[in-house]
Length: 472
Image 1 (cartoon, rainbow, N blue to C red):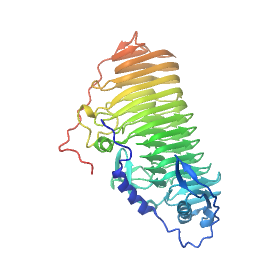
Image 2: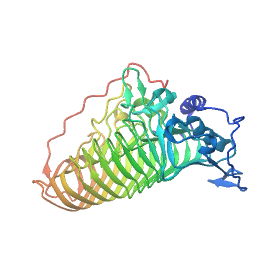
Image 3: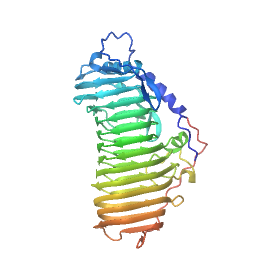
Image 4: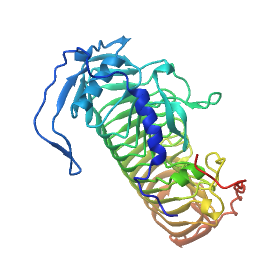
């Protein structure tokens, strides 16, 4: 399919305007506050474009923040953030203390810096989170704004070793009765040049960190804890996640790009993602999940030098289904240490992962194209299974798969189906029950001695649309 130009985001702009109007808490003029403001002359430049003539340094205490963990400091913190933006950009400092606030909004050219002894605490009251359009499981729906969010912002950052903590009183991710999604912890929509470094985040039952339609994002040296996903990269490009420590209830990192005809029609892929030097602990699903919302495509993902210490299913899980469409391609993972995964190291399931969409992509176009998956220098310990990759559609086999330099122990070996250009080399594992390798309709090298697998079960047909799909 032809991918759309990234700048074509009319749908998102309508949602962004609504959010911007709802989140403006107060005017910065006439506040009467005697804020300490330092102005430095000079011009800061991002990507060759002048963005500011000044750099202000504001302290939320000067705007009336108390920091006692009981008083709501929303207005003071938001005033500091807004003033920083209208004065041309700079830094807002949160000193030691516990700051209970409603939802906060970052605006362009603003850095939020947290003291090591500072905590931002999300309000327990859902009324403190504005309702807007949010992305949830591949669709835009009504939902509560993230605790700290930004829309259409450029050059924003959250730095420092302080804490950002969601409120445990907000239960669940999605209210099926109202059709409303609960607030994420950090949520960035249609933003460019984002940096989140050093901070500690703890979330309740909803996703922790959710960039969507964003470019040039860095998450570095973070501690990410929560009862759901850690970082969900959703239709974003040029993303770096490095040196982070995850302990999550669901996928530590999940890569997504929309679901069904809505995601496919909008057509914004996730691409150019680099993950390195991270440690993963997952309680419910996978350390790294790719999919199952893949309807705009996922490509160019590189994972290096990571430790997967626990997973409820497989450490690495690549998933989609017919009806998603688009592609998953150019996935490279190298130098991984894997233990504590209750199902195994790697699963590839392109037949039946996730819910079928109400408006799926039709026909063979709806079967995701998958190619170039490469895994090297993998060290496994006591894996129930090394690789489960039989759930691949025969109409679109995986074109290009390699598994090289694998050492360690596993109970079961490798099962592959419907693959071309396979390379298996230096698979030196012990403890497995014979056979080490089983295949069905697989071509390539390193397949000698493989035992034949039975034909995988066919999937249910994709439901036909009763009328042409219209994005609305």
